[in-house]
Every structure is written in C-alpha cells, then in structure tokens.
Image (cartoon, rainbow, N blue to C red):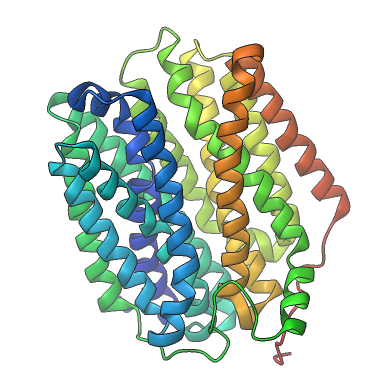
Length: 395
C-alpha cells in the first residue's frame, strides 16, 4: 500500500523522534546505576553529566533553526540522526568520564535537533487536513522508543549496560536512513531565519502573544513529566518490587502512550487547549498513584499506563496546538515552547532535590500532582481559541 505524503513524513519523523526522545534522552537515567558501578564515578560527576545532557538538548533546539535557514528543514533532522549515532557509539565504548560525557551530551542533543523542524516540514509539505495526524504520529514515536528501550534494558540485565547504548546506535542509523528516504528535502523558508523568533519585532510580539497559553502549559507540563521520570526508578527501587519493574515501567509507558497517535483527532473535536488540560490532569493522577502506592504492582502498573497516555498525548498536542496557532511559523512557535519546557526541566529537579530532604519523596510527588491537577483545571476553565494564526492568509 502506497503511503500518502503525510504518512511517509509521519513514519520517518516517528522513527527519528522515537530514537532521539524515547531512547537516547532517557537511556542515561536507565543505565545510571550500572554506569556508576562499572566506571566508579562519584555522584557529583554523574550529576554534572546529567545536567550537561540538557545543555546539549538546548543547544540543538537553538541551532536547529539556523541550520534550517541555510539548508532547509530536513537538515536539522539529519544532524540529529548523526548526533544520536555518534553519541550512542561513543558511550558504548567509553572507559572514562570525559568520553562518557561527550557521548551522552551528543546523544542528548539529538532531540533538540529533530523535533521542532518536523513542524515546519509538515506544515509545508503535508495537506492541511492531514497535518494534525502527521504531527501526532511523529510525536508519538517516543512511545515506540520507550518500548524498545525497555526491551534493551531487559537484555542488558543479562549482559552489560553497554548493550543498551549499542542498540540505540543501531536504531539511530536505521532511523536516519528512513528519514533521508521518506522525507522530502525542503528549501530554506524566508520565515525560518531563526527558529526561536519571527522575522520582525512586530511579528515577535504577536508570536509571544499567541503562545502565552501554550507557553505556560509547557512550563508546567515538562516540569511534572521530568519529576515523574527522575524519581520513578527511585520509588520502585525503594519498595518491594523486583528489578524488572523499572524496564517494565518504561515499556508500559511506551505501550500506553501509543494513544497519542489519535491526538490530532482529539484536538480537532475537543480543541487543543482542552486536550492539554486533560493531559495535565492525567499526569497528576499518575503522580498520585506513584506517590501513595509504590509497593503495589497493580498501582504501579496503573500509574505507568495512565502516565503514558498523558505524557504522549500531552507532548503531541503541543505540536498540534502551536501549528494551529501559528501555521506560518510552526517550527519557531514549537521551538519557543520547547525551550521554555527545557528550562523548566532543568529547574524542576533542582527544586525537588532541595525539597526532598525536608519533605520526603512521597509528599513531593503528591505536591507535584497537585500542581499538575490545578494547572489542568485552570486551563480547562480558562479555555482558549482553537486557532489564532500569525501571518497566515489561508481561509
């Protein structure tokens, strides 16, 4: 069966985003205990490397627009593939903290290079009625990556943590080749001179006004999501669950996150802001279950499944939402929200680390859940126009 343009771009984007986000970005945390034991690194060094991965991600986000302005929107996705391959390959064979850091940072930067450019590719190459579905498919690729990562973690338990990174390197090669084969090469757009701003001061102000609500959503959404991913393994390790619980958690998140494929349909029927609000509520419920019943396999499985649905739909709706609001600057709009989310992802764990000694991990998760639930309720009550375009002349 011959795929449509939207189907081809969606498939390639899902593969690239799945490797960059679902695998390369989360593999460091998954393999951290084994890395600590194998290389004998201190908590300080491991923490600095973890922080550096966010720096790599931000660098990719901010430089992707400049590369797209010179060589077209497919160029950053190719660069992200190269970073993913090289980074995972270096980590696989790293024997020193320096090489480990270089590899992890390169692999972590892949997500910054690849995600936002697909918004421009989709809005320029895919018919309007296919765009929400294509964007949702691309973002939901993260679910497939998490499932594969969980499978690699099980295999690595029988051998070495390096097998996880070797698998990521091979997956990154395959995804990069699929991307080159299926995604058309685009010419530089006059609107993409920078990915994080519009071409004039007036346009920048209009862009900021159009993104006020999705920008606030990004800050809360990425903060609560990173808290879940940061502390889920610690919660499971502190309970009575078997070692396989952590890989199973990742796999469950990925499998249940496949519902994100339908985000475009949800957004068209309900409105993107309502979908976003429901996602914050869903993540909040998952955090409550994790914080209150971590010793229960049933509650833990329910938490992972609920979180997977809220996590993947929540990220997919952001891509759909920004493309609706600012179709002529879709990549710039999405990048702006992702930068806010990345900064929130850096600040949230640091704030949590300062709170945990006095409050405890369980209460922290409940507090985070409350923030997510209240923010979702506020967004649901506030409402938002489903479409507010900037520079769009289409009916």
